[in-house]
Length: 630
Image (spheres, rainbow, N blue to C red):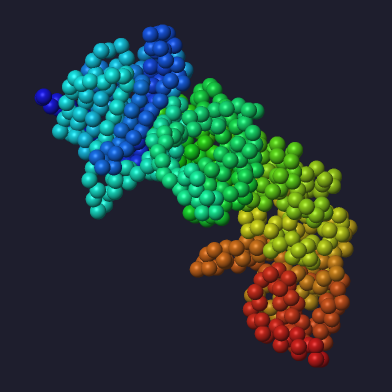
């Protein structure tokens, strides 16, 4: 029996494929199972027009068996089979795909099949784990069976053999184990079951294997039961993906169970988005908004992405390109027959289809969130608690490229409503003459609510948004405005809500200016400016940062990059109507030494109110005690 040689270019391709193309050896079973599925699909298609086939789709199956002693894995199908010419063309020439040719031949009718193969190289992935492969096959309509056998690049043989039934048996003899590779793990039942469920769970034909199970021995007492092992043929794959079913026919409990099992989450998803699209790219998707924040969600270890399938075969476990970064919380699956796969079915040759799918998925997610905000506000606020910060990061990311897509989804705590509100809701309540959207940033709602700088605006009935996360002010700066209303900090700069008469009344008299000059000289470079406040009412003093960097931004930036400290401007604002200012003015006129102590005390109080560190905490307490004892 003469051994035939692969063509020279096929030898190089085989060597490349075994050593380079596939990044995970375990996908060999996916490829062999996919080929078996294609064979079943071809004969099933033929049965539609040829009564002599005598089979319907439900009669096809794929059988998997393992022999640990012989170190073999066998995959058997009752599909179309191959004759000698097919073996020569499909297995003798690497990168010649019979499935691809079949799809070309049936043309538009291919939409009614689930044929997977495209390149004719998946079969050879088995050589990553096997040192010999034997294929025994009989083609439908042929009286002769053939056996193809190869140990890799040294060539192959084709001989006639006996086989009673139509179909193909593939026997893979596994390589010996080494210090670096444990090929024997693929001989274990649990490993094969795991690989089928992971990569081939949605193959449309049943994948069957005899497995070992345990049961209580008959007659065994309940208080001390005895168990025995037995063997039983079990279907390992679920076959019909839940995303292929109409959403109206799937119960919530089914979606919840699928989500928990598929993504190893203990909580049910908050929302389910089912997508079925036909057109430029045909695909189905099942997307989930998780019901809780993953523990590592805001860490660098978290990996975003959707599971990507082609005709029910897993291609990528986490395809990051399918969801934008700001929707990285989305989990789910996408299944499309239109993907341009690369030779190993692990990456994409072209990203056009992927971009079309990703753009549509982004729209679906946005629509679901908008609907939730409108129709289920408590539910949306739960979502916001879990993932709202990610949307804010999305506004800031890529220099604000996505701010228009995300700004309507943002929520902030309102000083007047005492709850979370959207920007649209805020603007809808603005006074007719209000020109800006006011916000105040701080550690939490309670701290912000007590800030003296916002007392005046609150008394005037102006709504203020409370920014409690470090990203909030950055998002406001990136957005700049919403519906032509600019964002403005209520803590920095002047309020625009006062009338011209009020502003004129707030201008300091000449004697007040002398006090400001004295305090500025006493504090030196500690402050940029000392001025009368147009915000304070019952409090004597506060700090503002003016334009640009705020105090909250300063705290955040110094926390994340302590090696490059930054400092916002310190503008000391004094309430000229407060008794403390009267005491300061009197001391400036009568006792400059005491006046300097007053100035220091007021500045330190302003720092504390702003949540900024004191230069000399113990000096501050000594100064308070000294003034108390006067």
